[in-house]
Length: 275
Image (cartoon, rainbow, N blue to C red):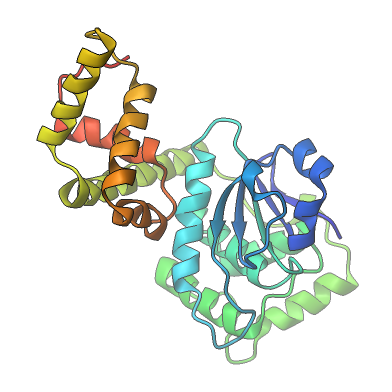
């Protein structure tokens, strides 16, 4: 089956074994991976969110949906970055995560998202438990449900998709508009700012930042410090001082140090001479 491109030059869906095809991964320029299976070949080559969960109808995937959404949005905000979502077969767990992203990203109907995803990867088949949760998510986001949970309406759509070759051009999925992209960007930045504020309150303070800055100025005999270099200094300080700081980033949707520290510097309004 191989890797399927879901959103042009950005979002891809497939199986764990696909990460072994290094030539294809390089050709597609994959930079990030969200793994629902916990297995990634050559993990050192990618930024990875490892969120293994079982393909079981009783599993609550609400936490994984939220983490995946912000992880994928973080990738979207990085120029040239591309993300690969996978489980073992690329049919149920990873397909459910991609559906949730499509649903949350532009608030399309679940039926349209499912139809669209089938047009890109015909063999997807999220289990009934995951589809029930996606129906609940759609209701929460839009105040309506386009697929009946009682009769498991998605099954008939899946059966139809397998019998009929779907024409991508006629599918009802609406591509993101400039307005929706702008809104998503604003939501992402607000999300980062909120988490950065919490992080700042717990793990760092303004006096400590100033102290480290002054120390580096003295060591470098300079009044001008590169922001990437200073970020690495803050990262080292946090890494040495507490493992909880690193755990915080994983728990809060796999943010990286650059995201956090840039916002910390903005939040504290420090007049540091960074370039």
